[in-house]
Length: 509
Image 1 (cartoon, rainbow, N blue to C red):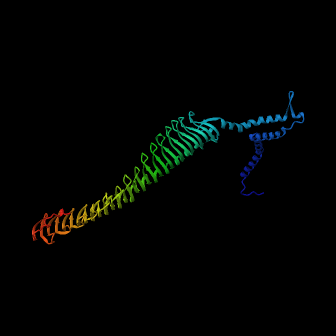
Image 2 (tube, rainbow, N blue to C red):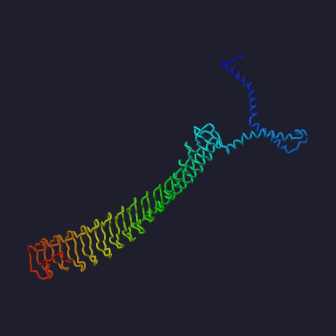
Image 3 (cartoon, rainbow, N blue to C red):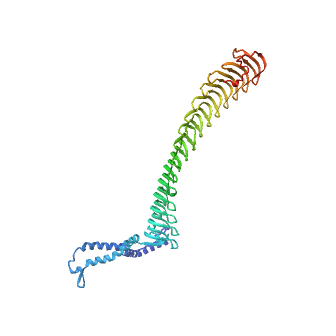
């Protein structure tokens, strides 16, 4: 026989030796397995249980001969009963060790061991865990397969109680109580993952109430009540992430309502009502970032003082209505930054005194002014900084008749204009004015009759002019005047009775 060139003698011999050793060892391995199986607790319990079942079936049958009994003195005992007692004697210790003792130990006995020790691994039952030195109790409660689960109490390394209640995998979970170092309850309620979660009550270190309501992840969440000193309610309403959210009510130290309405992220936001420390309403309307914003109504006592738009806590641009202390309308119209701005109406004791344009809270632009007592029109025209300025018409306060029409400056006649008698409506003067007096070129009338035309200075004839005879209308004097008196005549006639030659125009009605 020819061997292949690839045949390896060493490998072939090794393989053969392994086959021989395996063949020799097989009987021993089989025998070992049978011995282990025979004496294992499971086999014993199974065998005993099987025998007991068989004997239980027969135990009710009476032995039919003496062979079924053991003779003990003068008495006979059924062999079946003896077998049963023997089996029970074998089975009961096994059951005790396997089932009963662990149950008793876990339910009624407490085992002491060091925290994080090997004893904890896989252990289930009541335990008392000590610190590494074995001098201080760290935990008392239940273990499940080496993990802290169920009811228990946790202590710090000084022996102070930190928590008592439910645990899940070493974390506070379920109903429990946490404590301050002084022993007072800090929180009582529901926990999840070491945080307040669900319904609970939080206390100050002195034992007084701090909060009661709902929690999520350790923060106020949902409906709750926050307390201030003396266990007076500070806030009642909605919360989100520990801040006021949604509808709620704020209270003062004496329990007086200070605000009721909407909140967002801990601040007044949306519609609400604000009260002073006496509980009197001061504002109702919109809020933003704790400030009046949007449409709202401002009160003084029980009277409305402002109704309109707000921005950053102040009356803002838009249409608004102000009221006086008696609740009468003070102003209605446009406002900006808390000042009258644009078109509006101003009142005094409910009586209209101005309507027209405003700027920066002052009359500015076209408008009309009225008497406060009668409501009669006093002026219609242009205003600047609250004074007559520009073209306008002034009316007699008593008769309501036109008194002056023309130009004004800082409340005085200034520029071109006409002055009338307030009662007869006769023209008194037309021409130039300066600072409320005839000044410049003008014409003066006496009782509606032309009396003088020419130049004036500070209310007197001054410069070139003509003086007329009031009776005939003829020129009485033409020439130069100074301080109301003629100086040099170009034309002169004998003055007659009733002549206006030397009359002071400022003295005319």
